[in-house]
Image (cartoon, rainbow, N blue to C red; front, top):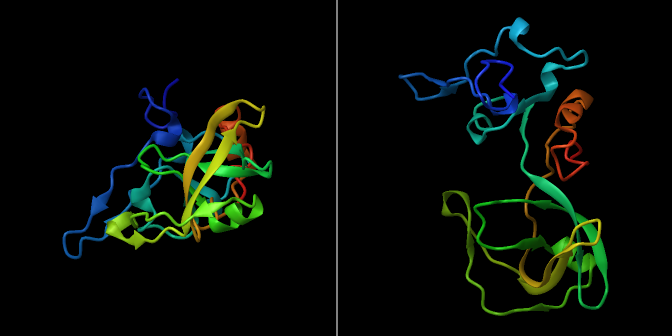
Length: 186
C-alpha cells in the first residue's frame, strides 16, 4: 500500500508534513494540511478529531489533536485467581512493566517493598514506585503471555488515552490492524 497523500511507500497515518521553525522565537509551526483533493473522502470527519501520529505535534498544536499509542487489551491476574481485563500500553522502549495502583488494588495483588530505584521518564523526571508485584498476563483468548511477571506499581501511568473520542471513520480505517478494539475511547 502507499500513502494517500504523497503516494510513497508508507501508511497514510505515518505521513508527516515538514515542520517550519520560525527563526525569531524557535516556535514550531506545522505546515498546512494537504489539499482536500489529496485527502481520502471522510463524510463525517471534523477538525476536532484530527489524528496525529508523532509526538512533535503535541506540544505545538491545539487540543483538537491526539496521539495514538499502541495498546492491546490483555487479561492480568494474580496467583490467587483475581483478574481484570486492562488496556496495556505497548512501549517498545520501556525497560520495566508498570501497572497502576488502581489496577493492583482491583486484583488484590500482593506487593513487596523491595528497594526499587526511581523510574526516570521524560526530561529525566523521577517517579518512585509504590512497590513490586508479580502478575500473570494472557491474551483475551486465554493464551499465556507471561507467568509471575514482575511489575512496578505507580500511582498513575498516564492520562486518558486518547484525550478525545475519535471519529468512527478513523476506527474503520484501522479495523483489523489493532489489538485494542476500544483504542478510540478515552
